[in-house]
Length: 123
Image (tube, rainbow, N blue to C red; front, side, top):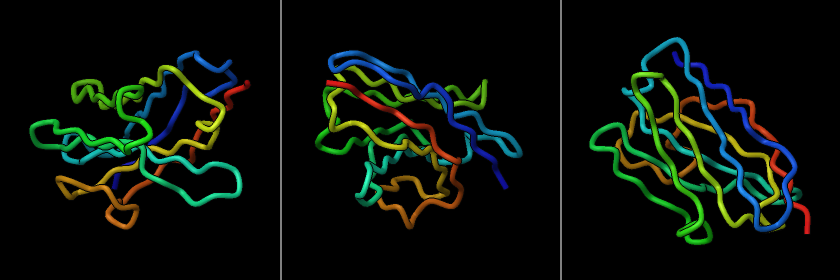
């Protein structure tokens, strides 16, 4: 079993940047595809991005393409989400998740979840 802890959330002005981190323990994160999800207030959780365990293939939700970048550091057992050009509509709780599936773009494909970190973007 792998435990995930997110960090790096906070309050930022529109146009600003934040870098979220996901730290894993229990098992090597290199064995899992890592996904970032978000849940805006009053809305359903949606996928932001994912990076596969094999070959590091990435996939982004269409609203995040060109602004967000997902990465992983298997040696450090961490993953990150760099968010640039933030907009008020990016306000949400952001979750890190791990999947044994190589390409996982659906919430149900993820086996392990962090507790989430709040990102608030002011206008």
